[in-house]
Length: 406
Image (cartoon, rainbow, N blue to C red; front, side, top):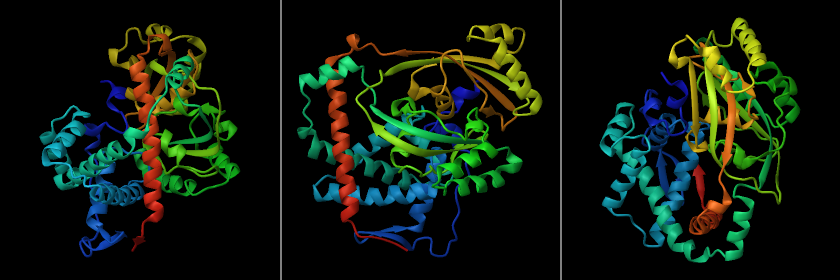
């Protein structure tokens, strides 16, 4: 049993396929619910996309995200069609296969798994077609404009890569035992509507399970690149004071409020791997187990000490990994981002809240700029520039579009 390695968001597709599909009344299912430049989005499409996003464990509210994605897909497809771009059947099938491979599945098996949870192959195909069409358009429209100078590469190498954006964030992570799931979800939905930092902090003091609870969930300034990859775009989409939609975790639900954001000259070095250990303690967040965790925290100074703690117990009670940040489960990556080597978090649980995760950061290793390939750095900078231009173009398409929501 390897609880953490099995829970990877947002691409833990196989484990996530146990979600039941969302249901809508049959009446009006195929009626228009959104019109984008005279192009119709039906209730069926919205239902299908929302269900698929649940299966993919996409952060945020699946219904809201489905609306946003489908509107953007219509705009992307229209722009691609206007440019004469139409992916071939073979290219779309290859794209579906590449997406399925992220879950270590064949295209055929992935389609069957989706179908077993109520998502049609056509829904998956449309999702891939829109993304592929947009990538082809972006390549055609912007790749030639994204030149990178040798001086820019030299600066990137000297800085070690990474993000120069810093964020000031507050957090709430609430345990969500099955018998209280509806109550906690309702509370999370209410908190997501807050815009006041003081009101959010008051909720954190009452309900959060993290070590920042006593400080109202407030975290210090942190580089955006230190945050888990799925959380970064959610924070960038917020204005100061706004709160993310509730984010489902294993046995918990999380919300994050952006208090401030700034762009500075300092660029953090890129982290190549994070080494951490997780000791699994029965009893979840019971007072007895939390007390044992506090005692244990005072006895261990480094990850190696946990081997002595776990001696004589089943092998699966102690897990130790050294993984690239992109391969670490999102909830674990977030907790690790707050720790220095030797520090501990007890905010997470597993097994529907029945197991407490005693999580310790062992260390981080950064990529060495001197060993970096200049061609790879150049490509990375070019891709960043193309992405920024593409995001600006899509924002302009949205601003110019006639969007009617029924």
